[in-house]
Length: 589
Image (tube, rainbow, N blue to C red; front, side, top):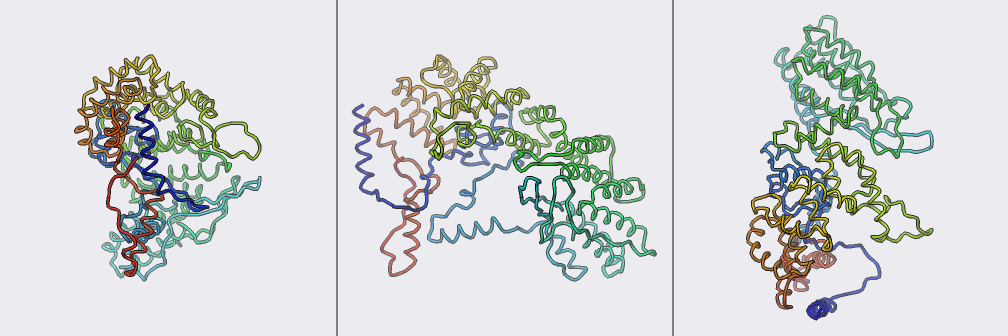
């Protein structure tokens, strides 16, 4: 107690003289010492260097961890398919040099600017054969108006990348066939321009949930009577594509079906595929959907019809369309028509140990579905106060206290029991993130039943020093080898429980012995976490102070803002001695 009191006085003494009072101003976050939204190095994380796992990680990150904890690995291709999400603050993080503000502004502008893409490649290639055309807008924006008076601006990617890529390949092929200056190629380009004019509009369309989108389509005219047969077949496809992009979906289906029956058409295979695409888009755009719905609604009959079309294609080898593309689209449909069956398949594929050829799509589908179903519930500890059904006095907007949230956490975990039962992976993801007592008990039961690393990690994270299971958990964590992807996580919580149960000296000795391996793992967040435990386990004030400084991972505090402002002032040569750059990578935590 004397040590703690002395330490508090010391920290207060070195801190208070530098405090200042502000009447108002922007809010600042503290400097970041532990990244709570994802691992420090996503590339290392994807390779199995998991660091200390936290329940606040996104579900996609935790799904990656589950395979490693379960004894599997990710292939190089699967690792490349994993794309962790970064927060806006990280994407636009200010640099530490004097041009930080300008760099951040440039990064912000770049983020919101539309980057060059397949549409630009098409325009570039088209310019080789025809006069330049105005820019294309692949995204269609429209307004949704509801009978209750709700208004919602929405958009969707109308013309996708493969459409422009196909157009580029076809353009060059037809130039070789007909000639770069031929009338046939000029007519083909004119038809393709009409197709892409339906992609997006500068003025927004209007969409009523009980009607289709109101648009003003542009369609290619019929090919001249004396045209080559190939131009006629291309024009039939262009007309169908224009109908598709202008949301004349029933007409587009009829046109694509006619093309699919033409054995001589080079578009026969892709037309079969686009029949299903038209059904899917029609299923989404004709279904009624309220502004408060968490998942876009769809017409189930149309979606099932698309499923039958795609399933019939799997047995065929259609020209111009890959079996991978067909399966991808079928997976998108089945996560909606057969969600539980599809989730079981996805979970099995993601959990390994076999390689998943659809890893990126499966990971995206799993996390999308879980996010839609769970993010409106208080599943995670950082759930917004608005998700808790707490009765409060009128005009009371103060943050909820932890005890006020407990019933909400318990109810949410109970309410998703059916979803958790779909697969072991889904069960683990939900349980790992839930702070409820029910999740704690369930995790312990699953660890005892399976004796597996994923459930050991989940149970240790939730363990309190007074739990009867703590001795068994400490012992189990001590048997995990240092080469295990779970080692940092279970070791950290082993040392935490040792400190909390009065065995600080043992914890200190183990942390000191393990620190070289902890640092070698390459996670600064993990090093800072263990350093914090080492400070807590210190036997003297001098030792505690030796472990007080931590490496700053992100400078987001008011102090850093003041430094940045000071560095900006230094740009004026007359003021350059007012400030100096802070180059220290550590500070007291």
